[in-house]
Length: 509
Image 1 (tube, one colour):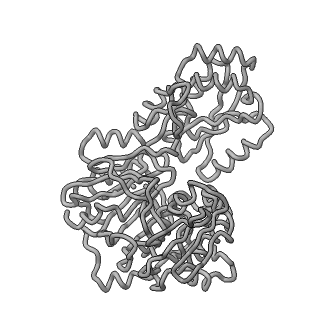
Image 2 (tube, rainbow, N blue to C red):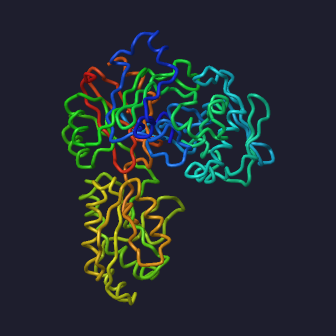
Image 3 (cartoon, rainbow, N blue to C red):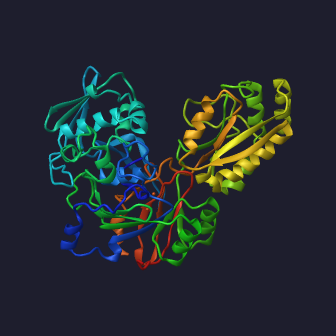
């Protein structure tokens, strides 16, 4: 969840390329060398440059993490030779050089770094922090929901003490308040720049959707939505170790087979979000490095509409849980790249999350529970996201086959990535029979090796090695060898586990 969980960020939302300050600086220093440039190939990039904006797609997290700063960030931890993740219990300074909770436990005060500056050159102030957090709790949509998760709900909570001192007043004691300040939403805008270009909109939504007004370790040099985004290093960044990468090219290539081929031929440095079978093949081939880490909130499950019959019947829901072919799904859909979340004890040994469910594949038990439910055979629909079809469709087929012996006839239906969340919510509210409303994964099935939203970290501590010759937010990493030896990048992408780097030095097309 840490920052510079960068590049997953680039697709559709601007009408024209965005050019921001920084290009002339880079030219003045001389063009970045090949060893200072990373070529990433990805399925799709951001549809906006504003992660707080309504409708921002998952890849916009990468923009937020790399082009903006937060008060605090999560501490990186090394899992093995090539893999880095994050410790959600330990915070590190970013814009805030220190923070202290009040003795009465009702507030926390942050001291802002004296040398923290935006890309515009203006010093970061407490007023910028307040405007940014006011915006996040007021703009609506996902941003406001995320802020509320840490009891960050009202502009009155955010107080400017002086130019470099900011206070957060608690609504209530909440252990998620400080951790929530390190996620992708509460980043800090150059409020003066935003307001100056707002056109009268108090939150400058249109301007910030199409322009960066931040101070992060990278700037957006150009943006061609659906095609390519180019990031350049902010050489004046003081809020952490300066990345050795000076330039990152993120190209949108929807076809996973094309991206795999580019990696295998050495025409690209890094990719992520490939189907699990491709990851397995690449790992087995041994020519590229593939790595990933489990992410606790990336669980695949079958969601049953328990508000309405027939799935308001608990015995029926239990029957479905015992009927699902968990291990088959793990192997056929994910090729083993997941952590089982089934077959756990009836009573967990400790209070933690996630805990494996006690269910396992047991058809006889499922049939007995079905009989106890008193529910007659029926038809239903299983909806899944077409954008996750490589994984979700094989799962859905196996669910359909597994429920047939119970007298449940399942019709499979898919929807687009854009329409799926809205459709699923509609099914939740429906009065009719919409029980198996979606396949976002399987309840109690498995914990995927993935990041719920995708970002790349261009500030990974090993990226400085690039010149001698990784992605997310809580993320996976990979590493390439050869002329780009010590090259690592962080990989994270919702729905798919791991990533790959070609060992050789690719020629930039």
